[in-house]
Image (cartoon, rainbow, N blue to C red; front, side):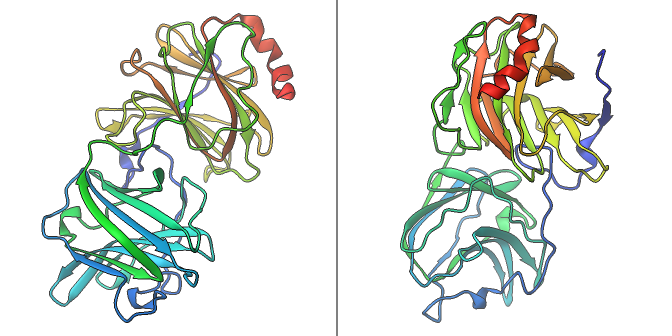
Length: 370
């Protein structure tokens, strides 16, 4: 399309697929000092806080709910999904909140060797001593999905087949108050966080006095029609890695929704510059990425993102400048949800049902007035 230079790259070359986004965040390299062994967890008793044999193999849709309370002396604890075969024990999934450092480590141990740690989480760390918690572990086709107190916090792609899990152990200075097993058909359990208002012309106003909590799951009550424009205002964090905006069908992460449009600005990439990536998810996989070098997003600065729907493509504007166009690859009439995640603050989301071109000449004034 005119005005936008783009390249295509097929993401099928990637060895591992991320859930919900085709961008990857860096992982910590494995370290025996960082990845402590099971018997190094702090606890008062010689044995684990909880242990359970898994008789029936786990399959996609299994949900394990663990409720408990963090003791005052707890520094870290671990929930381990184990594969025990005779004298050999592999750790299929090691979920390890570290309270002093305020992050959650995920890892696996295969043949007595720990892999690379994963520490990036969707939510801020809010596990507190002397507080109760509820953790949900849902098994999807490719990964564990984890929710804390009803909100999705992280995922962990299987490194050992799911069906090998035959034991769960909880270690650390916590009191396990209950463990429940059930089947679920979708994830996460919580409701959508925001309903996008619909209006026209210059009627869009900031909704409320507080910014929306990221990740944002916002409902489009009347869908996204041709000629309409979705607008998102916010601010880029000071040291961003990436963020993304999905226009998708449904408000759940699993089963994976159809995503007709995935916008993914990536800062300071290995290619030496910023990249604006556009893609779509359908038929169980990401399509070919469309990449544009550079964009108008600036760390620490406010932005105004507008997505206009045309008869055969989406047009993407940042601060009043056209930055990308994306031809439809799949059905777009069923779009009903906006999902936003990453290194941004979101102030407002708004849908315009008619737009005049003069609107774009005033975008800077709108940004400064927020």
